[in-house]
Length: 232
Image (cartoon, rainbow, N blue to C red; front, side, top):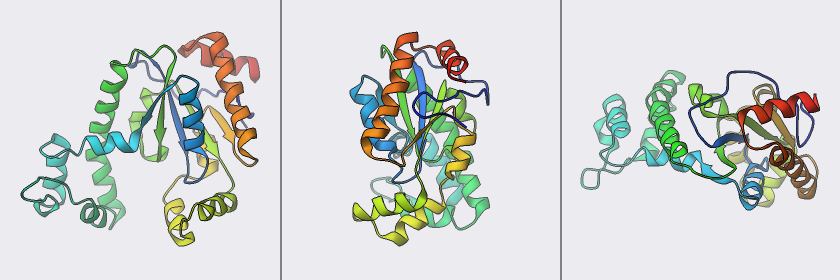
């Protein structure tokens, strides 16, 4: 299993070479602490991209992705005057069955991948770009854009407690968590794990170890491999 902070990098797949900037996919379930990690990395100098926001961008009125969705799921998904998507209606139709959900993903993912690739290609950031990924298990070949995948894990009961402390309804939390990959799945498909089963200071200490190890070696694809060899 990966150690905390720096972690053991396992060669699970060929990492992407399309982006000039070193690209980290940051994954984690609801109330896992993923946003805390992303915020800390941003403060340390990383560029931060929220894939949820980017996925909304590809659904602009008149865009190619929205046209394909309308063709697949119905013209009444779009408000006549504004061309805006009725997201609630789309969700009800797309998640009515696993087949419909897969159909939606097959339409959206190529557009999300292309948009992310464009975003990364014009990035001249000196160190790295951190992409917050809410559903790593549904990213398909989009994961090929990442040089490294980092996950934030936290026991489900603790996540539920933290979410409730932020005012989230427990039933809503359970429903959302059930649609997300488990911590075991994330560990198996990530290079580095930040274990968030302590306090925030302990989590940020892990982030600091990981960041400092990269900073010493330089932000490059080979640097991540060297880290894995050093800390295996």
